[in-house]
Length: 125
Image (cartoon, one colour):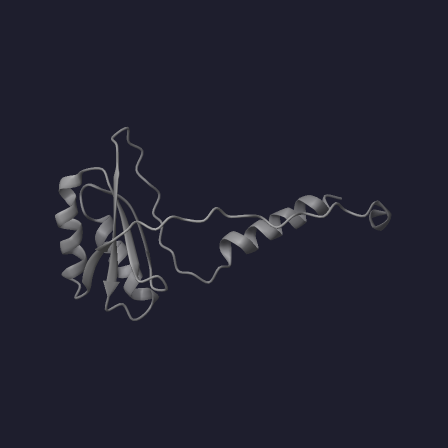
């Protein structure tokens, strides 16, 4: 039996997939072009659907590579392949009725998996 592998998989799923956060992360477009990240504090979001609407609008903007926007953080982080697209990204958010203020790009803490205990050889018989 592969109990250690199952435990690791379950622990990994619990740590990464069940956080309760509604993070929208479209897959980045493969590109050799350097990117720039900008972040905004978004005022006026009332629920996770607001974050989804912002994400949808931003992903449609030419020059936007990826978007992270959550209701919980009230923050939108936009990765741009073209710095000139920043004004269009800002307009995409404000035309939805939200107010934005530039802020520092948050640094993500690394995900730390829970240690996996080795299976007890006596219990696998």
